[in-house]
Length: 170
Image 1 (cartoon, rainbow, N blue to C red):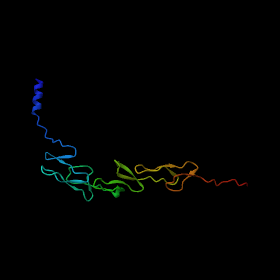
Image 2 (cartoon, rainbow, N blue to C red):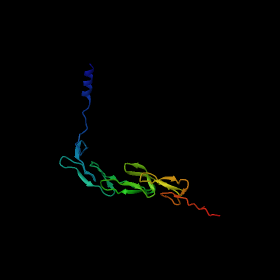
Image 3 (cartoon, helix red, strand yellow):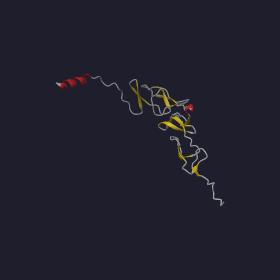
Image 4 (cartoon, rainbow, N blue to C red):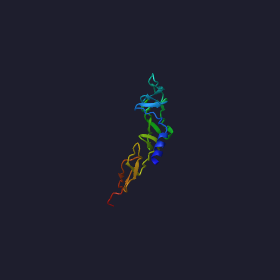
């Protein structure tokens, strides 16, 4: 009896409406159309008698992959107020990549793109740079050991104190 019920349910399900397009095609209104290449967008969807019409992206827009988009994506802006600078300029096939201004390191990374910068730590006199910062890591400072000093910011080494109390046979 259960099998009859299951067969009844299966026969009552609506047929699948999803069109299965091949790789390199996109679905629009139940039809499969050829995709536009990276750096372009759809101007006219395909029809029975014509293929997809594509147009290049222009003016700070891009598409990174083959697509069926009718609009190109807007290029990202690197916020100068957040100390972001353009690391790689936007092209028709690639979005802008941001990095940090001099004296800053990237505090929030998305892939290889920076979204937020932070000022690099300044190693002051009396300390030295233990590990220099990188694009994605802050400077690490270390206090000069006893008997040594540094007189400048961002010193790479600490120098020994000079002994000014030499023996003077009095």
